[in-house]
Length: 68
Image 1 (tube, rainbow, N blue to C red):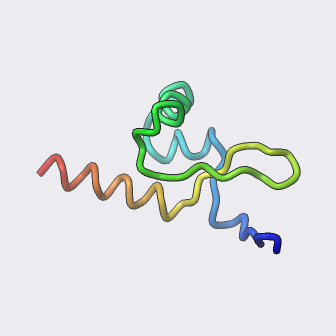
Image 2: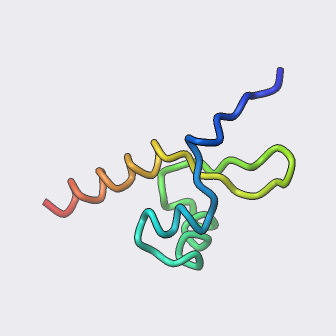
């Protein structure tokens, strides 16, 4: 069965980097090292990486809690 994407819930790599306040290079590095704690999805047609907003928000909350 095919998964249905709600694209309004996803960000592309450039948007995700801006959302997290990091460079695209940093985001790509995190993906390779798998240190981010979120999964990278891929657009079913273009195969471009997609990041779920919910996962990015959770990552920011975790970082914020670690700094306290």
